Image 1 (tube, helix red, strand yellow):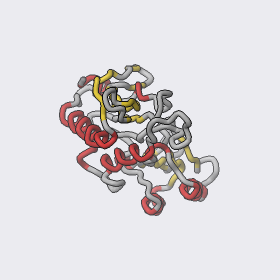
Image 2 (cartoon, rainbow, N blue to C red):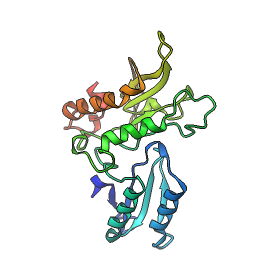
Image 3 (cartoon, rainbow, N blue to C red):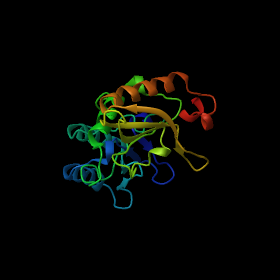
Length: 228
């Protein structure tokens, strides 16, 4: 169930589950929010709760397992998904929280985050080739020099930058960052510039290398930085 984003909350709410979604760049509509509210509104107020996470994601708490299928169907009919949202998978794609509104925006991150997520999850229906990684994997895309997405603490960070020769807007790439209660590692520059069209193939290749070569013996040293 965890691989499908369903987590039993045995200690806090015995018999009930938390469902973690995939919401690339944190983009939701009013219809989505009404559906989230309806999904948890059937339960007592002290357990039926919606979380907004630090990775711009949504978690639905207090669910009963027999309701999960209807909720998943409702998510898919609205263009959302809960697949590959937990365990050793790529976590929610983080982009600029003010994408499309930032007066200093260099690149709108919304579609790029969606395209990366579609590659990872096979358009939200599940992609076995991108599951069972050595450890969880975080990707962030910034849309301006302010780096609202905090790319330096992600396994892959993409920072907007014009090509020094052509002026075309693309991304500088940094890799290997992560942030946990035990250790913080800042990303390492790759000295690599990508066109926007190259972002998805690059992320796919990096994930395949990590999947096939990352350490699996010691989970404390199983993030991308240890492979680098």
